[in-house]
Length: 247
Image 1 (cartoon, rainbow, N blue to C red):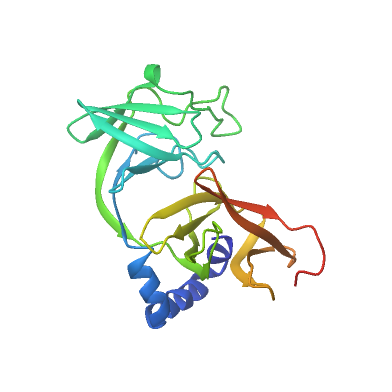
Image 2: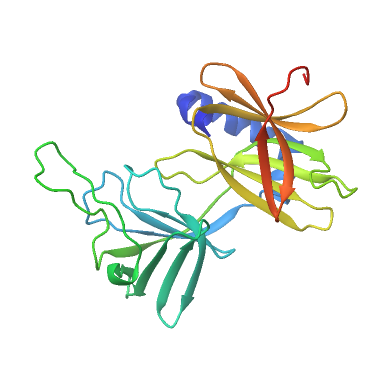
């Protein structure tokens, strides 16, 4: 995602053209990384340069962005029941609660996890919360986007005898860049994890002579860093390779 963000308008247009014309990549986009349909809500009356937003995906997941100053990746599963929207983050640390309104959802600070405050100018005497109690997130429509795909590989990541389809794609961003790592079983069952991409500008898979597939990440300084792949407790794991001579 970092490299995509830094390419500029012409570079991004080139990438879009490549995805439109590369039929093998289009197959993966339509088959694995399908278009994401989501409902977007925004709080427009705050102090943030970009309005805080809630994105509710059709698969029951959410992305809550409350401040550009925050590096916390606020993603997880949501529940909408009896007029109450509850967002629970994947790390198990935070819950955010909203009541329904005619136009969207109103934030309930008393029932929610703490949201940090920030100073929005050098002259500000006090910090202010970007999402105060009662802040209304208004519905902005249903949107559809696809995750730009970095690379795809076939590899038996769980060592159970069958190769999974591995996909690297752009992840959600909230003051922090991430990438999405998906492993799809031949049966169609999928494991998906989000990893931080701080300091990395490109991602790809690379196969060693023995057939093992590694994640290759290029740092901003141009150095290649390799990670060994695995599955543990139902999650994708990556561990930096420290031994010499693999490639």
